[in-house]
Image (cartoon, rainbow, N blue to C red; front, side, top):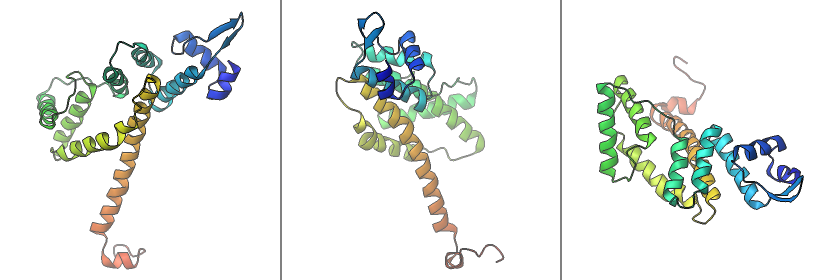
Length: 217
């Protein structure tokens, strides 16, 4: 176990905790106080770290994801769906006309795009909540351009990073890291693009020549 800890970067007490919780499979017992661990244990520890440290998932949710991985009868898509749904914040539907209108809009958008999305997908409620807030704030309601951009990114970039192999741990880890980190990268890129476009549209010719010249300068 000390070697497994050194190779994985996970402390021995944490490894023992994962073993007790059933997140990490037992090693091969070679003596009363000694077990051997292999690369499958390293891969599982790497996955658990991705779920806990990057995905910020509680242990109870990590258990559900691990159970889906270990259930060989569960189709690949459903296994990935378990992990994907685990990453999505749980949103309580609101019993208001605003919510119902926003949910109808979200469902219509998904249908118009031809997306194959489960009716119970938590992202439906998450997007519905966002749309309802946009309605209350009087913001533009057409998000189709965002949806089409997201579809292109997922189809052309993100899902290509998921290995289609028998290593289900690696597939889920790639999904988790991609979903979280690509999401963060996209948010940063949007803010950078907004700053750049703002400078292009709203910076006067004089300000471009003299960056120190402000209003009244």
